[in-house]
Length: 111
Length: 115
Image (cartoon, rainbow over all chains, first blue to last red; front, top):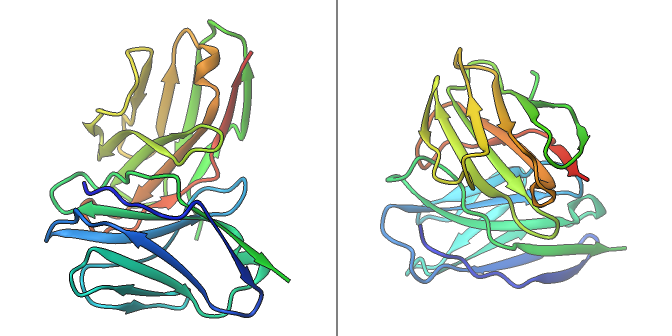
């Protein structure tokens, strides 16, 4: 599975959009980009995933560049409850579905 | 509906003891995963079950770790001769199937402390 690179930490003002970047330059054609988050002392929570098209759900939007080498997770109106560690993961159809987590980005939403 | 549950939520044991950690997946989910998370790190894959069989146990660190899922539902992670380095949060996740697009639903974890 391709490796991902994320900034270790970011701050965001409450009510503003949070844009979390992820680099995955070695991604292959059949690999998806997943985002999970982990709020303190809880298990990880699925947010969104995509292959090559941009995706949106009730939690967030995922923007994937045309060359698929990077992506951005967008939380449109961050709240204090969005403070968490956000993990960008690349996983392909050829594996068992196991997730390979990196260090993630710690997002701190401030009032 | 009920999510993934794990028991106990906390476990304190002494070095050298045997522990069992239990995971109850979401009803009907055929895939079950165990991960381990050390302080300040992301979760690390341990083992994956599809039904009753361990389809991928490449993440188990050594032969002191073993997991079973005898009826394709509840799973137990067993650790023999525990060491202080085994202290971590053990997370369980389940999904409706396997493959690249199945969402994994995680339990709250079991916090294991080996003294």
